[in-house]
Image 1: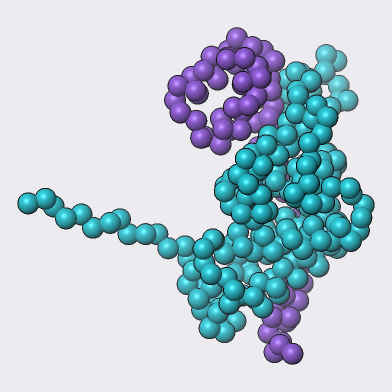
Image 2 (image 1 turned 180 degrees about the vertical axis):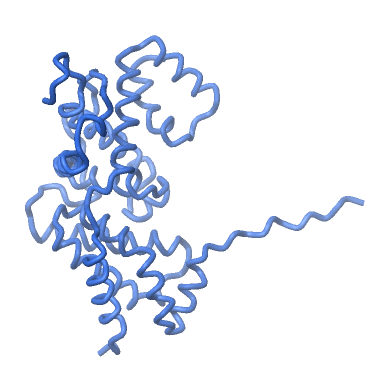
Amino acid sequence: MPAIQSPAPEVVHPDVALVARAKQGDTAAFEQLVRQYERQIFRVAHHITQNREDAEDITQDAFFKAYEKLDQFQGNSKFSTWLVRIAVNESLMRLRKRKTSKTVSMDEDVQTEDGSIPRDFAEWRPNPEQLYGQSELGGILRKTIQGLPPGFRTVFTLRDVENLSTEETAEALGLSVPAVKSRLLRARLQLRERLSRYFRQTTEGAKP
Amino acid sequence: MTCTEFLSKLDDYFDGHMDADLITEVRAHVKKCTHCEVVLDTTSKTIAIYRQNEVYEFPDELRERLHTAIMMRCSKPSA
């Protein structure tokens, strides 16, 4: 007689229970979710808007919206992805209001001229961390990512800074998986090219 | 594998979504192409440096202020 194998138990994300409790009006459960994700939401908003005050407002607004719309969260995606999507929408809306950028829509074609063709083939030696102090390095990283079009910056932030999967990023941004992949490649290569101005090996061993 | 093919596979390589044969091809290409070797290494460092460094600080004072503000807004009865 063949052995009957029971299916492997499905791993339930701990947020599921917290969300269920929060939906029942348990404020402590919602507060736990806020604690877990406030840093991430602030970081995402800051990366997209490039403005600390906007990021503060968006963090508050995103959690407040999530709280108000908690009943609409069906649990088809992770709570964190749903929350990030709210924060991204708020951030893009903020950018549109500011009108400082031409490309603030995730649907917009963000292809740039030869932006993905590598031109700088210099090695990064010594490693950037050895070349620059922490605060100087932070300044370089901020300045460099700031120069990316918002569409690229957002995809890079979600995929590479926040470590969301390609599928989660696509869901959070309302983009297709191929669109996320294409933007990510361009974002990574553009950032690499721009960082190379600071980190490339120089013959004199001097900073650029 | 050409340099263009290498570039088109770069993201899958980083994301670990690549079968063993293709990984072997990518590694073989990088071994003989210095330019692509540098692109692979420096792109990998680009990702790592943004992942490892907190680009925007989130000090405890700011965190507490935001946290309090969020919870105050969320505990008010809706109008």
